[in-house]
Image (cartoon, rainbow, N blue to C red):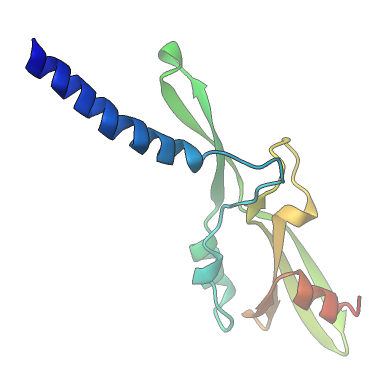
Length: 140
């Protein structure tokens, strides 16, 4: 009986620190945490709109629903990746703005501008991404 007890104690010594490290990754400090949903670092200026759409995809997983048999089945909750588009004309040039869902700041079933990233296209090529560049384009 003593060897089984030793094995159980050894498992506790290994499992408890591992579990503590695992839980540390799940703890928040009360500040709003931002979960990135999209592979923004794979999108670079000069890409065509089709290339950007291929990288960003049609939908993003924003969470999981524990439904089904006994609550053991995780069903992905998805949202459209491309939330809206806009055309801007400035100084005789036309820009297409695509607003992609890229972050979740508040899991509240609402999508707000701070959860979107604008992608700025001119002549079907990505020239910039982000609010900083859109604000500069709009002189804000």
